[in-house]
Length: 432
Image (cartoon, rainbow, N blue to C red; front, top):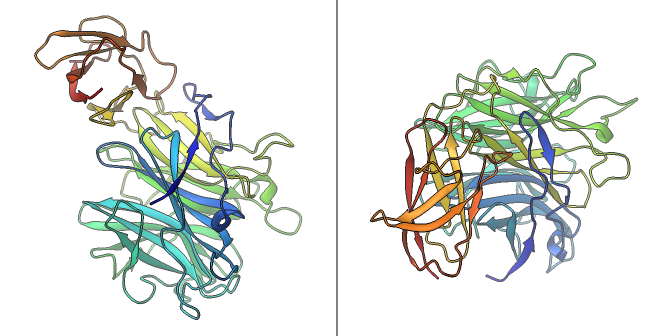
């Protein structure tokens, strides 16, 4: 499949306890007719074995009819910063008159074995309030999707006051044997809250009787009218769920879209009870005249090491931006006791990205032999003579090992020790 290559280099990194935007934002923007109007609503997940997969809502002209449509596109990356964009939507709109013929938007994805499950909001007519949630499955790494069933898997329940007007913006995770979906419900008085539903098979869904699980904020708070576009991830294999969302407040007569912020919340009971961060909001609008002066919107993120790599929309047609955050030392996130090396791509031929998942991953890096850095050695124990990352990184960003020309192809062990912890290792293959 022909793709367009887009390159983005992360320049700004997150300081401890801080949230930082990349200074080169926006880094992924509408560049082709089918997505020329806007790229919005991103959702990013890690690819098993290394790399990242991003889906988003693309608005642009249909190449055959010229009609403006919204439908998901995708992009792939080995390191989270350099992306290959699909040359068309990965799922198209339904045929005229069907439930998702006008819009297929706000996609969210989840890896299930060798497949990717996508849930999305579909609409029969733009602005008609007839949003429902559908499901599609990809068996080719996210390049194409096939719908599940002949209609939506989840529709609004008008007997429930929190979703009397509409539902949208799903986020999907797995908890044990169940799929858990967090979604927005919009009431008849326009308040937007986060709700929860579960399913054993992805087809039959059961709402949580206590919905909404995250209500709007107190009057005067940044999210006192809407907690919009939830993105939920488990903090590694620990018990904490972490949510980012877009908070909206009221202007003089309508939503104050020119002052949206991102908020954070955590849950330790699989998403039934949520606690807002005491430091909310966590990400703010840019200064006047900047590309995101109207505020960060519709966030997505993944967790690596002790930090976050995230993406957000600016509300216009300028594309998507990157942000980072460091969890280290934050009591509101319970980090797992163990940690592991995540190295990708593997095999590699020019550069190896080395990240840590687990407790304290951003505190310090130390090689197995005591030299600051990450040490690469032969699997037989013979030294490879290559160290990278002297000193402790300033953030949770991954390290990158670029072997010198004299380093031969072969099998290497990446060994890492944090402080006084027992060193851990990971086998990698270098092919010149």
